[in-house]
Length: 114
Image (cartoon, rainbow, N blue to C red; front, side, top):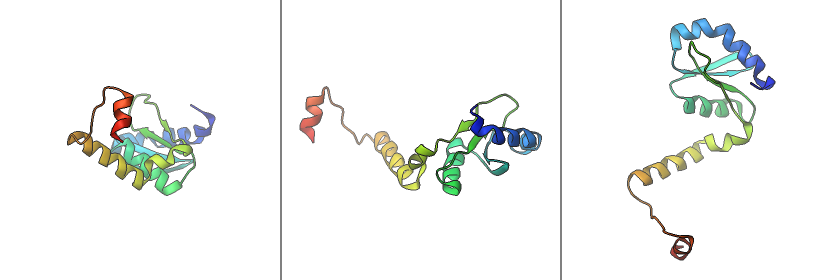
């Protein structure tokens, strides 16, 4: 793991036993020496990290007895986790589930449909 997240890893290790006892399988959000929250999903933890901290590095990790890899939040990707973008992602998923899309055999057919 990048040295940028060394303090976050130390924080996780310092709190690991209590996290395992109360939150095994969930996701922990850590910035520097602070545990900022516990979340049911990785996506929720990342979203809240960007909401609380903005475009700075932070770490999200599954609370587990193994050596699960931590997610190093890339500040350049904060836009993806914004409420506005996530709403668009949800709409796209809904459209796909509802069959609201078209398939094209080639690029010309696609361009002609615009």
